[in-house]
Image (cartoon, rainbow, N blue to C red):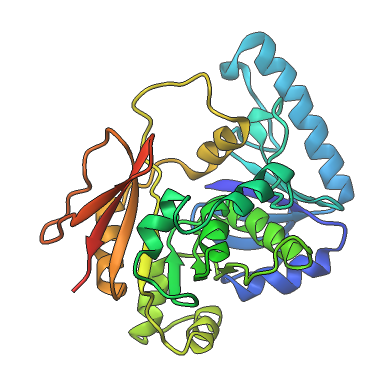
Length: 314
């Protein structure tokens, strides 16, 4: 199981946030052990532990650069472990085995992204054309795999009421932080996406079925009054078929944490049962259509290097 180290100047902030989202047993280990979620041990570390950890990461990075990853040896962390560091600029994510790379921090206020929102809209953004066709302003949309949150923001800016789902807790933490900062920004005069508890649309479906939902999912269910979404947008992470030297650094770190989605068919079947109108699946333009028994693609929307496969729901 991978370790997720979380460093915050005010530990009380995280202690108040995290237990609302997952089962947590408080005890002491290296730092403070917060509990397990999916494939992660969550560990809250103080300034002293943070300094020790970052020193060890730098030391091991030099060894790896000189002798290769097979020379790695540390009692503090493994190469796939992750660090979330909170500063005045926001939460930043580092994969400790990639110590030479700049941490990933999400910032929706970046000029290039704000310009994209201003220039975009229902007709100019292919994801908006696919997801929002025939949808009225304020209709409920689920982004089933929020990731870095960019497409959730595009859909919200185009008038949808967006609920975003993310099951990888390192990504969830930096996205939650970015949306919190965006909520107080003057650049976003529209209703921002709401990030639900760590989990998937299957958790929401279980809550709808009254299958012993947690407090957090019960709260979301009540806030949405048990509503089902008109459309579910699904952007699964597929294994790369070809290596590319042009992968952006933020996407590289993102892929290191996310990995490939191995339950795509089950996920699509769940989405088609939950959505009222359709499910939209993003795919590389030359990729095969996702095949699920009894569920067939109705049509697709061209997005250039990608396409959006649309499945009508009965």
